[in-house]
Length: 295
Image (cartoon, rainbow, N blue to C red; front, side, top):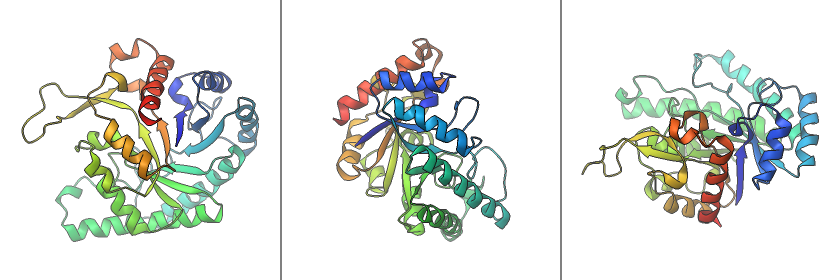
């Protein structure tokens, strides 16, 4: 079991200092996304990535995952039926593979296609057509990754067409490519309306390349007979939140031991009271909590 963190979640502008702090917190593995000394994974040059790799090596760290915001971006408009968009996406994947080589990473995390506003009104057949189209796009990305010995991780962002474990599992099986795996953001499941349980995990069991770990609070008074766990309110610190982490995490550790377990605190989204202790302390407490549960 690999426990990693996203370096920019420490909210330290200097990448060198972020690496030093990451090592001091006891991590051996990292995901990289933003705050790369003025660059992001989507803007950095291969040459600069090679220089950053030297610093990563100097701290005895290993990069597991590159996190792209520009592969089927969830907050930018694009035409998902536009072949030019998908051709451009493959160019971006090829560049990310170059960066992954430079940084020593195996995985590239990105998004499925966006979710139409009327998706819930579509018939089962129409939804299946949308998912098959999504799978065809993911398959092309998988072929590019396979040619470079990399693995694409698709994540359940709520604005995407696969924002729940059931849809992620469906998409992965339709894609049916060895170089396309799932990154299950467990609490995004609750954010999308379904409290994550062992039943949720059954949909993605054996298909994971990664999982995201964080805490979450429920809306006060939202529990009912029909919804005993209540509604998602906001991300939280996992040692004081309202989510029962243990059953799902123990199952992942047993049945998907290859998954990279990445702590993604979402510090910037936390309640004001939780942010008072600072991003490094939130990460420290989160790591301690998840280590005690996983090891």
